[in-house]
Image (tube, rainbow, N blue to C red; front, side):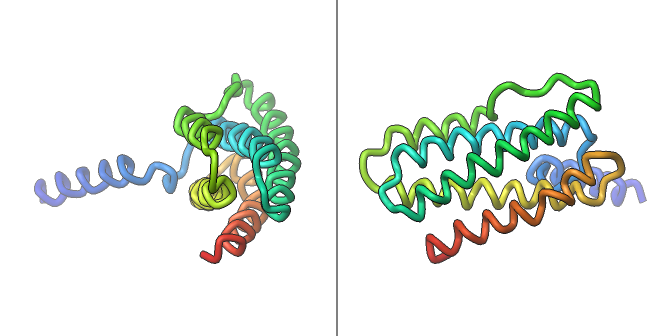
Length: 161
């Protein structure tokens, strides 16, 4: 019995260590993550508008800026209701992705869309897990999840994934 509890504890620890995006979060934790995702998508979208060669990629980038700006306005309003300080910039890993894309001299469109796929897969997983939470962040997640899934599908369709 003690061994089962110990192994169960290890399993639970591993679950949170390797897959925190799929674990339900507090309202504040989730909203901070959602805001950082939106900030990243807005900045990446602006970069895509500037550097993309393919008109479809430029249009997708424009859509990312518009959709994630709107989503971030909603997220910031909810953060204010939760009396929390909202993050002011994307996560470090998203900033690093931006820098990599910024430095690309050829093949930008493919690299950009791959970043969009990766980021939206992560966002869909995060938002999907939060839909079962209690509190206002669950409603926010439920409302935005279909849009994120659509963004992911569009990016995958462009890249032939």
